[in-house]
Image 1 (cartoon, helix red, strand yellow):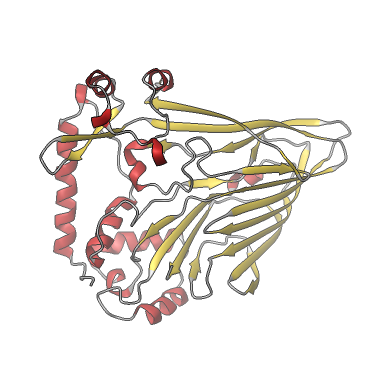
Image 2 (image 1 turned 180 degrees about the vertical axis):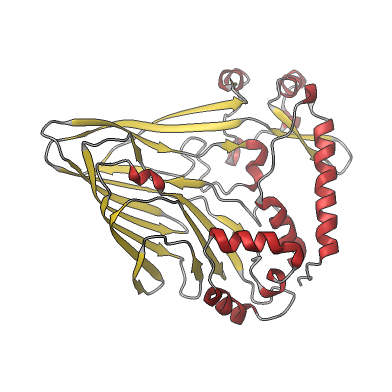
Length: 370
């Protein structure tokens, strides 16, 4: 059963996090500084305490901000249409491009995968256990598969440590069955990883021994060349599994939302997701006034990089966004900008715009039972 979230308990949480950070910083080799945590971590901890849920890594996770394909800026190719469909388990995009010149145009196509800071990896929602294609992306051009060339590197600051990791026979992205257990490594390897800054202190074990976690950043890029024939339309389709942030409760529940200790976080939610009073009124009906989360409401969050759709000869002539929250009883909030609601069919929401030039990215909040 859940418990209420009080200001003094939040103060204790903040103090404990401060002491843990100081302990980790003072144990770093060569006086290095630990990387800053995700802003959302403190909120996750607070919600877990409030609801009495065990603080396991799979209870809460932060989302990664991912978008669609990116092309170099050009005045020779126009985007005739973009049909973007966002769901909790799949994001798909269908583009139609037109070469407006009388000669072939070759552009570099990229699918930018976000950097993965392994010191924060346990808090990140990675949708796939594939250490290279960790979002299971696929691309088709005019119906035929068009794979991208993937390059992946491990970085500590500005230093590329990929070769060292390969020399030590360690995976660059240790997820799934490729997780690194420092205790299983030879002593010389452990010492080298710590001395070179590849392993970072990660708290203490139950018996008081220092624990470590990978401290490098994974940078992954996927690129290819695409030829656009003159005066012809080319259809490019792209899909992948999104990184979906999750929390076992929601800070917007009335008993949490009205807490002065969470005022800044609530204000940030309202701004980033354009949360309206009507949304909160419906949420309050479902949540009730109990301190505990008796309705079992949870959050899901998706961030989508949309601004790169402005790299073309003119605006996107026809744009359509479909949001599928996966259930009729789920509430959705985001900032539509210039997009206008066109329909709501079943559990999906549709928004459209003509001559659309995206000037902001999408941050979508879904609240309900899952």
